[in-house]
Image 1 (cartoon, helix red, strand yellow):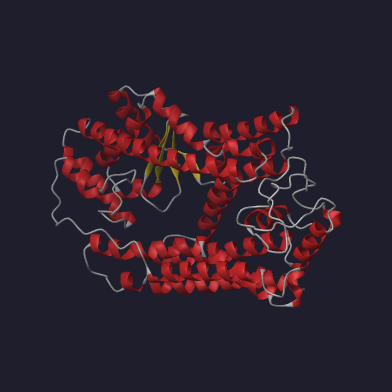
Image 2 (cartoon, helix red, strand yellow):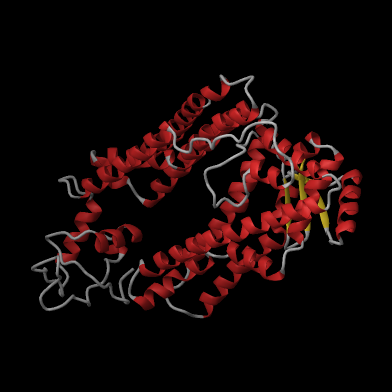
Length: 475
């Protein structure tokens, strides 16, 4: 019963708070009816940021608040791994459900069924599915390199590649989010592709409420949203099509770089065998994640260069360059996206600059970039920092969880245990290397990640601080 109450409480708390914050963040935008669309887009952007932070930070805040509350009660021993995942899942579910109300206020044509199918496909099956594949592979990977290690890695890599080569698109087709293009759109694309001498394998129509178009260079497919087809005329659609066809003409090296970018976090599946060889559970993932983030930044720059190149190709294909510029402006206006942004490193250049490059001067002054920081974002971030500190301080409080008490007692009883005289410099006779990292589960051990974090990051004056965990631990 206690487990159900905490899960339901996490769901209700995130749902109510997300709707409340989203409603209050949209007040300036709702009051701006009648103003120019660029001004309204700038007022809407902070509300979008607030909604995103509610989705990412608020569930973690709720979980940490519940964890800190439970540590103040005798029920602290119930905070197991299963409860952690259940609370986080319910918290994120409540925040996701609140997004439907937020989006419907901006796009009234959105219905609940389309929202559920879109979230289910994009977050649970596509992005969530990829994360699940990586997590399952990491958790089940053996601690030594063997035939099983390579077989599991090969299966995970095959799934990731299948997503790139058509499985993701097929999932969207099964969920009725994609459908084949009608004859009119296929003819329009065929004429533009024939003029540019580009091969297109398939054309799809997406049920998205946003006006947009996409190119899939790996499979040579084009995707147009139904809102784009409804808002733009044939000449403008052909201009946008020329831009997307420009992406299909990218070099093989660029396409390979895009594919490798999608597989940047795949090497993390080897965390268990690599950390066993390195005698350190954090060095490899920290180094690789840092390297992957650096590569992501470089890929963003490459993506911007490819967008500028595609714009130039689209302009060259138009008899009247103003057609492409006005098509871009119409897309931004329908999506209510700011015409200028503060981020100069973004993949897409600013709309205002793209129109100037196309030879069209907008009939309005260049708008200022919207605010990126919001009051609600600062509140959520401050709450996250405070809750993290409170939970860390709670470990040293008199109410220590039973699992950590058992762990300390187990370490004291170990035959090779010796206390360090000065924890800042380690023991005088060198680090003790033959004490296992943590006890086996039947000896009072706790969750593996909790044991690693406690043993490696927290130096307790009553315990020896192990600087280099042993390869042959009892996990």
